[in-house]
Length: 96
Image (tube, rainbow, N blue to C red; front, side, top):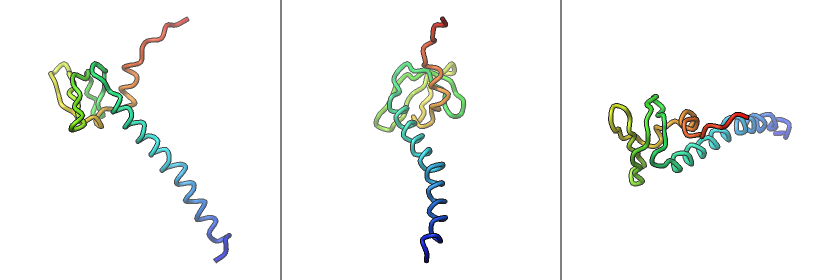
């Protein structure tokens, strides 16, 4: 086999890695960090669309209790949507 025969295959692997695998790994790290930085009182939205405020955090089973208008519900921390929840806890910026 010649190097020119293998080069297109290596190029395809590089494209798949840089456009699919690397961004997914980065997103996974961000989601894990977001879940670990949650604190009591944070407003959150779950991936299923439930809105609430964190009442308790449990590090043993990686869960949290979310207080909603219907009462308190226990969720796994991975069920909290990072994208939707970030906008709830950003302080309002003063317009100039």
